[in-house]
Image (cartoon, rainbow, N blue to C red):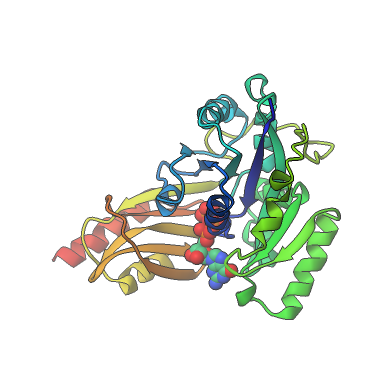
Length: 322
Ligand SMILES: Nc1nc2c(ncn2[C@@H]2O[C@H](COP(=O)(O)OP(=O)(O)OP(=O)(O)O)[C@@H](O)[C@H]2O)c(=O)[nH]1
């Protein structure tokens, strides 16, 4: 029996993983490949799953945590469900704070090892922010280590968001990446627009080699001292959006937490309908959406003060209602 190739999409929060996944799913359809997806999110809310709605009916979700050792059996269970659908390819989108080595290990579980192989770890790089990671994450060494491993173990590095950086910055990033990973290919993109056909090459040529491997570091044993559901100090907070509001007001609210806020996303009702709000570091975008579920925002950040944020959020809506 041939093993199913697995592509792991890694990269820090907001780097462009879901944007690439949408392209990969479109290409899968074009090539007549049956693609399935395992999504992993930090909180209990699956915004990326909603974004991908309609792109693939075969999405398994692992919410509330990064795929790390305590989730190994859940990964195996989810993968088995996907394998029952007889896919040609499986994409795993990790959370922005996951170390791809953990999921690679999960693929070697006894019930999976004969059914799947790791084809590629693709790591997306947010070119606008990568050079600032060390200073932004100063208080969280584990996070610095994880973002570094995302680069070091990648087979393919995609430096995304090239529309937001200068040529001088591109050269600095190039130098940094080559220092941290001398063997990976490096591709530059805007909105993760890469040559996806070449990423699929191994599947097309049907040279499905039996391998599950990853470039491990010498000291890759997992650190068990962290609490089970928090790999780093990164926290995710879900805020319900009970009534229609304005984008300006939401952005003003987010700005208040900017020192700790790394990522926010969710569905908000504005005057003329529902919008998907995406916030990466300080950059915000709004896209009209056909989403029909409850409106909410998810805030992800370092040491976010949950009770203060929730209190402020409630006050924000009391003001609207008054
Ligand atoms: N300006 C610009 N924005 C981009 C680019 N690529 C993606 N984005 C935007 O960046 C935001 C985050 O993109 P995603 O694809 O959701 O990133 P992600 O890595 O999946 O995010 P998480 O799953 O939250 O870690 C979205 O608003 C995208 O539209 C790019 O090349 N340039």
